[in-house]
Figure 1 (cartoon, helix red, strand yellow):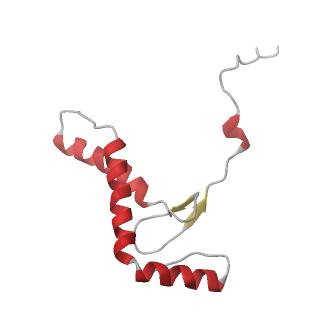
Figure 2: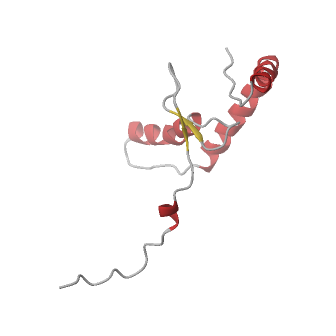
Length: 106
């Protein structure tokens, strides 16, 4: 099954056909992307093997939520239904928090 996103019907159909006909290369690119994420991720050494294994999976889970051909889009979960979120920069994110707060007025 192929799910394609697009602004226009014809564009979306073309994208879906392209992915369906090149599924092997799409999967290979995905596995390479996951391997790069795994290679870049820090390794937890907590003394608990199970906790360390769980922590090692978290970056890959986050990566699996990305919709790679539509930047800024995240899926709500990795199975069953899909819900997307377009992440846009928020003006508040660029505010520096290093300034000294003003003294309370009396």
